[in-house]
Image 1: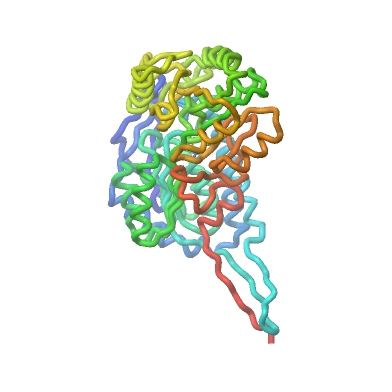
Image 2: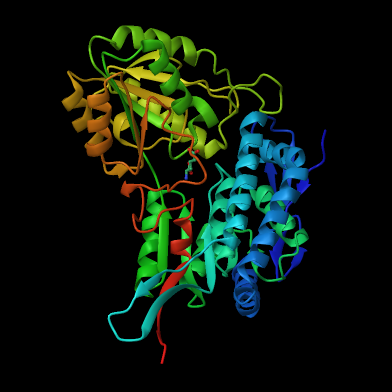
Amino acid sequence: MTSPAIAQHLIGGELFGDAAKERRNPARPGDVAVLAPVGGTTETDAAIAAAVDAQRAWATTPAPARGAVLLKAAQLLTERKTQIAEDLVREEGKTRAEAEGEVGRAIGVFQFFGSLGWSASGSVYPSGMPSTTVTTRREPLGVVGLITPWNFPIAIPAWKTAPALISGNAVVLKPAEITPMSATHLGMALRDAGLPAGIFNVVHGRGSVVGDALARDPRVAALSFTGSTAVGLSLQQTLHARRARAQLEMGGKNGVLVLDDADAAKAAQVVAAGAFSLTGQACTATSRVYVTPGVRQAFLDELTTLAGTYVPGDGLDAGTKMGPVVSDAQLERDVSAVQDAVDGGARLAYGDASADGLRFAPVVATDVAHSDPIATDEIFGPVVAVLDVDDYESGLAAINDSPYGLTAGICTDSLTHSTDFAARVQAGVVKINRPTSGLDLHVPFGGVKDSSSNTFREQGHTATEFYTWEKTVYTGLE
Ligand code: UN1
């Protein structure tokens, strides 16, 4: 049996912490994947203080030199990729291919933002006043807090941290409690890359303690959060009350519309990948599908066949296509969503409400009404509801009739329908003949409605806007 990985706090450049809490591998209950410390307000306060102390010197370091540290961190993550991915599988459960893809994404993120150290970040305007030029500069906010979820335990911290650092901020990260090792790896890579002490800090602990302390502390200028809508909206209240900037990426109930003119097999592949990859544990996952009558049966036949290929197993075993559910609490959500749907009259075209440990096979539910919870509430598991609609317009209306608006998809050969869908669907990301999950790292990402604070986008160049404010400088020339 492999020994446990050791997660630690990183505060003021020091890695430390006792092995207070164990996290077991969701695929193998006997495997203690990680031992981690549990921090509280003392550690959070120390991390914020270290960040405040270090930030000014970092902000005045030339941007290309800041970028060089990020590029070095990318190189170290590349060298350590196999080990990081293995630790990620053991703590989170996803497959090795998914974990390696995720670490690869974190590497790409550091390469992208590291390179931005060389790019222009302000504007030059003609002034309306005589002999004057006007320029703008983007100033860092200072110390920023990051609260990140367990489902992408290294990619999400990376894509919040890199734009914050390249912009000259210092960071305090509170990673999800059940995936402490991935954030520790990120901290070690940044420290070993030569990032000055205090610029990137990691505090492990409970969201209601460490996360709350970050949201309340007046030294923390902004907070970027990815997680549930309930927690996000409550953090927003706290941040709003002290006029701190908030970036919230929250839940989704991502719908796909499959039209008669779609190829049934291709549409099923798009839906299966969106619904069952990552064990359905992505806020971008497909969880409701609307089909028009002419394609319904062929699509369902293809989808149930594909569902059978997602056999839940140990993510470290070669050939495993789908890992286990992350935790007992998540399994309980998955199982009760399916059970309630059956009690409400749904039919299960594939799967059922049972599990073997945390191994839970995909579920395809049909005969579901538009207002049934399985069609309206986020589940975060490999469960997809298939609903009948008469035509394109009623399908579009059904997708839009939701408090969420993160991603949405359409499967069609019609340019007219796909173009109209992209224009009218209420979602931050639209996928045409592609799975709702799976994002490029260099383009904007975010949702609308209850899925997002819908202010600043994550990812790509625009991500730096959240971590900076724009200053306007008038210069008289004579
Ligand atoms: C993806 O679909 O590739 O937590 C990423 C999440 C999202 C990221 C999804 N913030 O699932």
